[in-house]
Image (cartoon, one colour):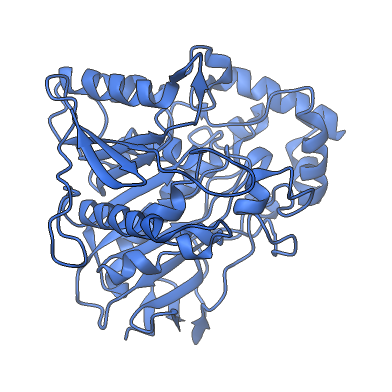
Length: 451
């Protein structure tokens, strides 16, 4: 097993997974700590270290509202994912994690880079559902990348623009981009193939994937993309966190927040405690908009859905879809509508790579009768379902195995189709087009296709 290897900054040592055929490297630095003068700056290079760094535990999560605080019986996502109120948190958060099944560094296995969701306000790579071990067992090197959130990740201000005109905001997206670039440079040391990188994410992570595949710097790096519940167009753009405001508006909001903090300059704001900023932000957003990705002219040049629909995104295969009960407005699943419209439009504008649509619609058990809620499919795509508290039955585990198979096959080849663990062919998942609107339905009776 590949328990020890090298990165561009020094040697690292991993730890066996639950399956000892997989090695896990947790808390690998990919950028310098974004603290002090690096707060509200694009990610800077990580420092070198001597000796071997033991990468056994997840690094602290980025600064955000403390997970696990509140009444779990009233908070779906607390009881589902955010269970640990004692999880370490720090502004020093730019680390990634690697799951590799490689026995040596020269195996050239396909690579997945995972970007978590959480509305650009919350989330972390240590969430239970993002366990990469089952994908790694299928012959994939899995990487999950942390990034800055909320006001520390997405605040803009005239002084920031003056200091760094080519990176005036979108620091969280820049963190992701730096993580992807680190993977390109380093993943061969973990048995991965830098020429076979798929990026994937869910919700805001899916929106982040859209931003990354719309950034020209990534065109030669990213070979495939998976956007889970993250390709969304809402009727009211004010409610659409993926529809960025312009830099000038974002700067004015940043000035207003500095006033709320009681500081008169960027230098003063950089000296404030990160947790004080977090707590003041929690008060501030009760009556003011949160900070999200913006149109900065560099990382994000325009609304990603427009660029995708015009066929100007990276020319790569893509999977996208939704859960049945998320973002339903007047009886219409807005994600389903958005994905299908985007696929047809992109194809009409010359995007000729295959696009695969899915709908996740099994019965989700539990005393809370949650329906097929936003994010519940994550347990299935990662086949981490055994960690969930819900009383899932055998057919749910069968479905999770199939969905993880499809996910893994797509990461390997750009085509989700293949065989199940028993050697039988799984239901054929054909690309979605206007003439042949093929759909994959993940149901309690297994994976089913329809046109």
